[in-house]
Length: 426
Image (cartoon, rainbow, N blue to C red; front, side, top):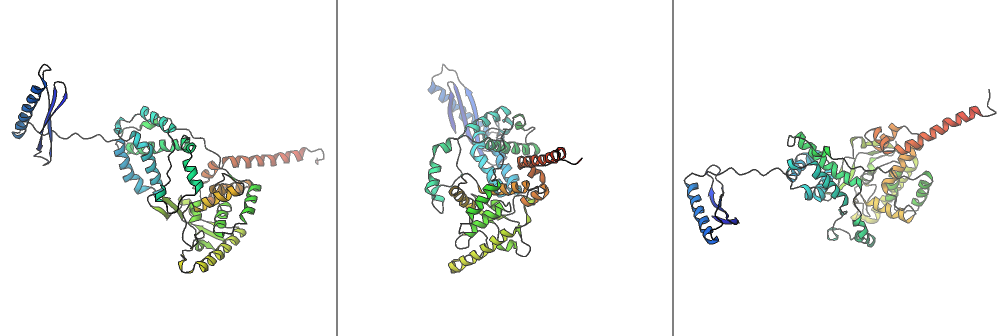
């Protein structure tokens, strides 16, 4: 039983009874209003008498249990349903992990408790503006959760206040918008919402940066520096990206058994991936078109043969602790490495040799640029890079094709110049 004062002269009384229909016990409450001229102690006694009266009426069936009110479906409720029924069954673990981070970091803390049907374009616009101004958040593990401690430089970078003070990039803000908009699109498809409020909110504009690639002279310089590196595993990793256009995860998942030594080809049909929840794992590559067999230049085959011999030497040295898993890129004992290990190694190599800020993925872009400059057919370039269609290649490397087209115009001009030269034959 319960008696509580809500405001001067307003009291709420309640009794806790078993519902004969559902068998569950729950509160039945009644609000009463008393004269403000009545002293508070007398108001309480009157409320207690009303409480007794309510209990008698409920027991006699004069007051029935009201059906419990249904709590409105919130953005958080639907987000969990979206993750469980759409994202996890249909999308890759990496994509699911990305969506989970976007939801937990800035979508649900700000919008999660709003009833889904009360989410408006105006509220989403204010949220987007808040996201633009919010500080960056690191997804790195705590030091206590690491297998190996961070380097001094890494700790200094994480502690730098300028790093966290920088606002999010427009591309990241765009990811937040796209995640919310995609989720609400499915709410409309499932008849949970009549319309998606994101339709009335302008999608954040993110200026797409041209992929950073090395020109021919700088690529040659990098190759000369690389020739001095003793670790042939990582030398092979760099050249597989630079000479073959492989992605980082594809390189990390390659085995010597994927090489056709007679035909000078390599089968790219796996990729190493990572999420904080699962750790590293091997899965299908990025798209269906990413599973491919590509031809290797003679120089790449020489490096791979040298890398195989290097791996055999490591096995002889490690003896009983050698893990014979056939990886092209492996640790000191033959075990698989984290997919980002070649990238971290390359970052240190690049900084040492004057290529500051140039990334492992930039090697893939350099390969594509060289193919375009050599006027290789765009369909062939798309196939070699593992793009789903030539349209993807054209969109990513539009600036390179424009440069190549300018060279074609120069060639046409040379033809005109030759025809109008004073000594041209008539």
